[in-house]
Image (tube, rainbow, N blue to C red; front, side, top):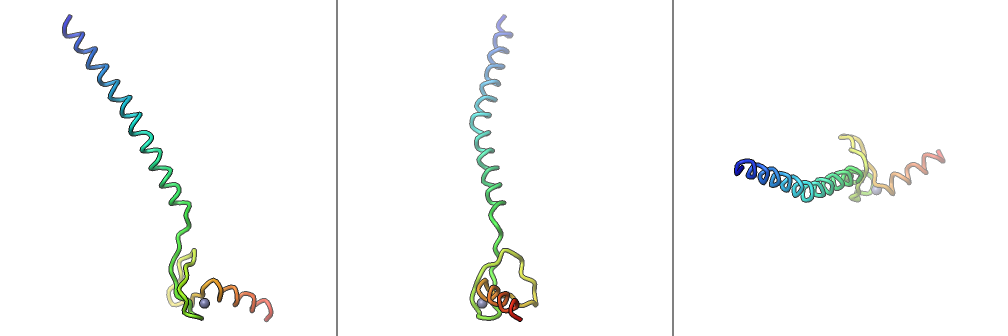
Length: 85
Ligand SMILES: [Zn+2]
């Protein structure tokens, strides 16, 4: 019958559409998720101005407001100085 043949062709169209969807959209989602995971891995850096030498630097933590922030060099210098005291 004519109607059943048309139904079958519509069914094939839907299958082709799903296959096309899987082929085109799945790699896109996969890539997007990979990108999101990569940006999550990257450490968040906060820009600071050193309280000791005034140098601009970035630190991997959120600097507390009202507390002195030191750049990497001054921080290490103050740490090594503390060792001797
Ligand atoms: Zn400094």
